Amino acid sequence: MDWKKYRESVGYTQAKMSKDATAWRRLADGYNRAAELLEQQADRMPGDTRPFAFIAALSLEQILKAILARKGVSIPTGPKGHELLLLAELAMVPLSDNQKKTLDLFTATLIWAGRYPAPNSASKWDEYQDFTFEQHVIRTPNAAMANRDTFPDWPNYSKIWVACTAAYDDGV
Image (cartoon, rainbow, N blue to C red; front, top):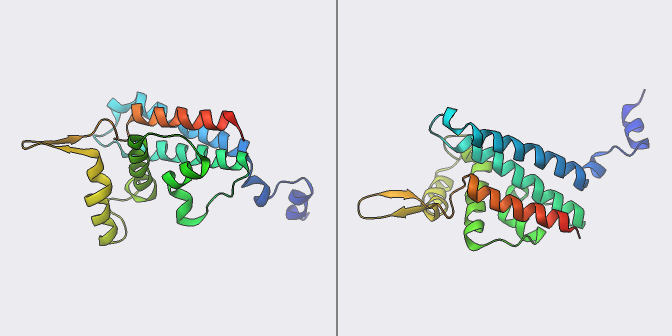
């Protein structure tokens, strides 16, 4: 049997599936649930929040692509397809300035920080440390701490998720 011809005859093709808003949404919901489970088990995780942030970032990428597919907007591919702020802008999801900063750190987590100890170039490392990460640190003369208004944690992720799902549910 020629499986490709069969898939084409029933409309199960890469071209169709890559534009299927419902398929993107189902995937997003699964990653959202996984992020929720990781948050619930945070006390059992080693002192690193990247596994949660990585899964949360995947869910945001998927829901943003679901919105784009639902609106009939072309979904960026390649490296641009992982830039969450770009996807949110194309999807016209209303986000605060702090949420946009959170998306920036989620993007870095999605691209490399959630998978590797360092990006593949020194210039990307410097860019991340000097610009992206610094937006999420409050420095005082005696200490440095995470900016709770922008850090990619459960409360900030949840607000972005709600904004994205509302944009999806609002439709075209």
